[in-house]
Length: 60
View 1: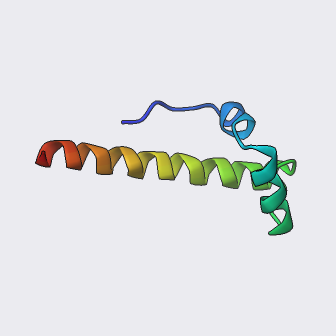
View 2: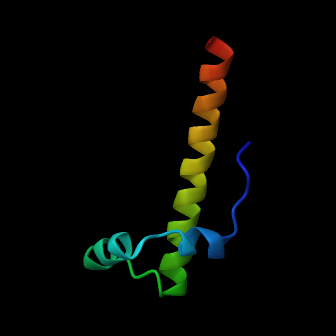
């Protein structure tokens, strides 16, 4: 299982260029509701990546 990163840590790790791109797409990470949605998506992606790595490790 991946290490659970705090929401603040996840948001701090988003580079300014990526933040600008997200903002152009309508995802303002300064909006608490949108930031929560973004963080949840990152956490789901982290879990899926960890599961895939575990499956790969079992195979090889």
